[in-house]
Length: 510
View 1 (cartoon, helix red, strand yellow):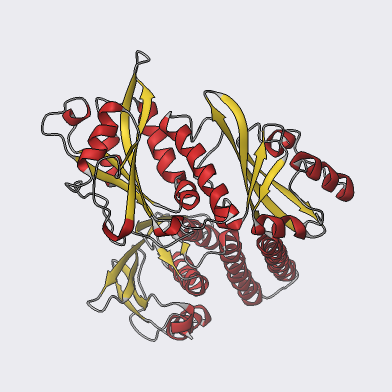
View 2: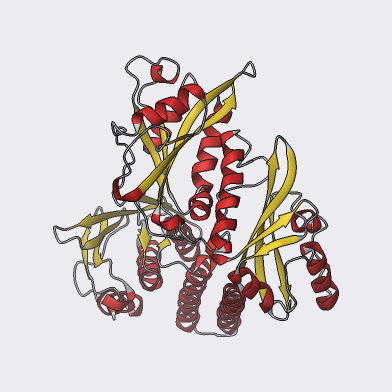
């Protein structure tokens, strides 16, 4: 369990909504760190009683964020550490008095020209009374403050607005926006600041470049972002979500995507509020044109692969049907039997191929496939008698290149056991076939399958027995495709087949 969850979850002094909000803040506060050009550390009392009692109270770091817009000042990971003596008075004052506290206000030294600000995070309790649930310390370099550019000033202004909302528990608002969204735009990708009417008051260079890809050539500042979205919609004819204007005017925290002229830009809006009233908004934008192009290529390739698999499966079924039709037209019992066995092998390959084509992963869970294959092999081989099959153990995950030859081998062995395992006694109407599988790992980490397939049939002939075509195929597959070994042990009580094969990837097997 992480330090954050360990300290917060089931804490008797916090509401469940407080815990969820703090988790949401930590998942999204990289935005705040980038805008403020500062490292962030989240502090919380080191004991549960410390939340409400000041005696012997100390603090522990629950989370940490480093800015991507400037150099970090805290190179060591401090999560889980107790607070330093020089920081404790600031954090304690922020916790108790619920006011923002600076290191200069406390008369603290600034090692390496670093300034620290402690900001209390205040939320109402069950009775509506404000109480502190955590404290954020912001660590930034004083040298970074000299001759700031307009971009830096805007970033810091946005950070101050977000921090003010966070201190009141108003940001992030997880009820309107899922903050853990994967692939969301970040500050460095592009930032727009809107006023209360949705007019662009600032556009970072990367934001200008992103919208330029969409064909927006004019100056952005002073224009309506919703108007730009409407122009793109008219130019492309793309139908957009009806709620998109709410996002483009900064009225709602949400995400959307604009597409035009073969380019795509994803947007995320964050309304800025003061005392519950919206006065501005931040819009992060990211050029995802290449990502969308690759997504389309992958979708196209995936559709092509699925179509190929579908055609291969149909072709295998056609071959099986042709063999069945041909066997019905043959007068020779031996010929019909040969075609029937060939049909069984083709259907085995078709079933394995269909199972493999469902996932296309690097490894395949083959237990259910083998259970079906055992039942199918027994049903196809039996006539008026009954074969009962069972699988003991688990194959687990196997490489796809191993599944098809293994299924063919087991099908042939089971079919052979059912076809030749019954005695001449008419009362012998049931045969049991059991497949036991174990996985072993040696000291070098190499894995191996040990398979035992037993039946309670009459066993193999004691003299003059020669394996037929089916068992010759089995030997060839085991040695050539599986790089394994196989042995038969027969007695009047039945037959046991032992198969051992290493679990190798396609590159090792080749």
